[in-house]
Length: 124
Image (tube, rainbow, N blue to C red):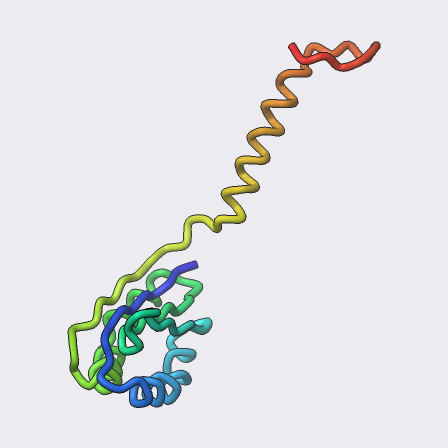
């Protein structure tokens, strides 16, 4: 799974929102599985958008496309140069917690390898 992260300043949020919504079908045709828009808590014109993709190559094609750069220019009123990054998904925080739990279980199993089946299990 891949993501395209875009950070930029907009001159007018309503203009950004309209361009973003109008561009949805093109993003879907390009392989986007959807996205989320965030605003900075202390600056309503500071926008971060994250789009999800199945494929890193298609995400990269989208990030480098002329259409995206034109849409960003229209939606931001050319206030600042956007930052566009293609990210690869490597781990969820939930997966991290589960991986640590599995490791702990393996350690516990290793401690009782000497159990003969008779009497209580005592740690080694």
